[in-house]
Amino acid sequence: MAVPYPDRRVRKTKEILKSSLLALMREKSFHQISITELVNHADCTRGTFYAHYEQREDLLDEMIEEMFERMTEAYRKPYVGLSVVDFNELPGSSIVLFDHFIENRIFYTTLLDPRTNYNFRETLTRRMEKLFREEFDFIVTERDAHIDTRLFSTYRIHGIIGLILEWIDSGFEHSAAYMGQQLVEILKFNTPRIFVK
Image 1: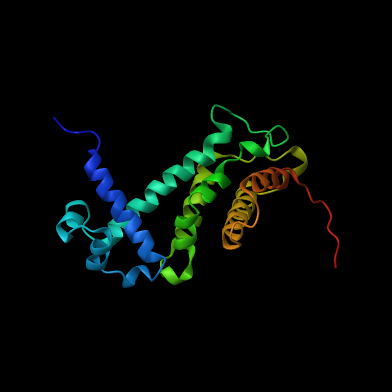
Image 2: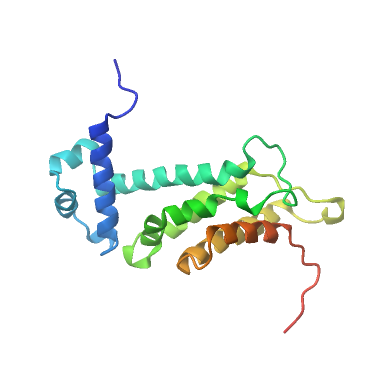
């Protein structure tokens, strides 16, 4: 009979390997980390590593995929069970995506650090863009019927992604609660006129 989930020892071994890889990536480029160095840091053997992964990239890919699954869950939380999201009715406290980034700050700051020499910023941007496009349809009013909704979606999506990335790059300058509230206010904001400096 097949075991549906890895046993506790397998999960524990994989967690140790992941935390060791993350710790080493805080010190050097991903490409500079050897499997020997990784298993020494994890206090296990090369055989143990190869029992679970073929190469370092497989371990890193699994780490990233697991984190993206948790990110997706946090992203969806405010609108679970809804068919329409009204930003005027949505409390900023319901936006828990920022809490996810704070809770996993070591992971995100490490992988987004250019010294790790891994294209995680692009990977994260692509994943968030895919998520936003698959989850929502933007509706324009009759007054705004001339707006290309795909271009509008791109504008909104990359604005939100840029907001998140700048916040992480700033060292999480503001609280998650503040960022959630600001995001809701920004999504409601309309700028028919701007002033030239």
